[in-house]
Length: 191
Length: 64
Image 1 (cartoon, rainbow over the protein chains, first blue to last red):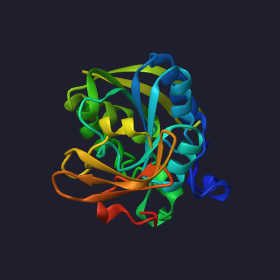
Image 2 (tube, chains in turn green, yellow):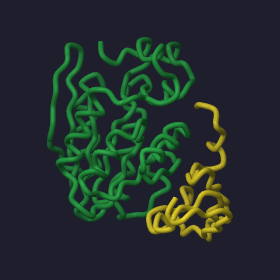
Image 3 (tube, rainbow over the protein chains, first blue to last red):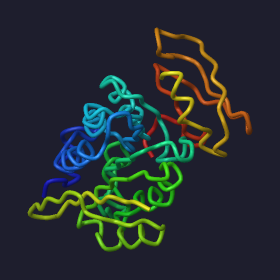
């Protein structure tokens, strides 16, 4: 499978590099954002999604829990902020928020306690980070703002959409790609 | 960070305004300094151009 934790681990331990999921989200985000928009690349990782949104003309704020990811985002020319999900941002400031979350369901005994795990693991449900994101993203979005969330079939697609619906979001799939072990979807969340 | 980031960030704990204190600036970029919450008084460092807006209990560099 493409995102096996053990495979990734040998390659990189500090910052999750751009892979199929980042690319799918980056393309959808670049198509969505307009010139002059203020957008958030939440959990920026390698900065790939943020750079694409900036090329599309947006002012991009890139945030991550991981200090190494923040440094890379800044080196890539993005406005980096170290923070936990949406906590350090004012209400109603973003025209769009893009998030490629840690989503792999992970058994507690297989977790590694390093930055790569933080970037990949979504806890036992795969939704340990997605749910707090969905709880908070409505606050930071402008009234007509749109959130783009990457959702894997491994994470429980219907559960994620149901949770988003319960928080008042309408959902629509704007990009989708199938791989042997999972289907990746970019879901647009609007109110 | 750019000074205009002040319009976007807030205290992660109580969402109040932050007050910027600049120690080192390079053109438009603020490289070193701090952000202080006008409500709770918590101080957030700006290091190498990156504001660290994690709450104090999450601020250690070690992974979770």
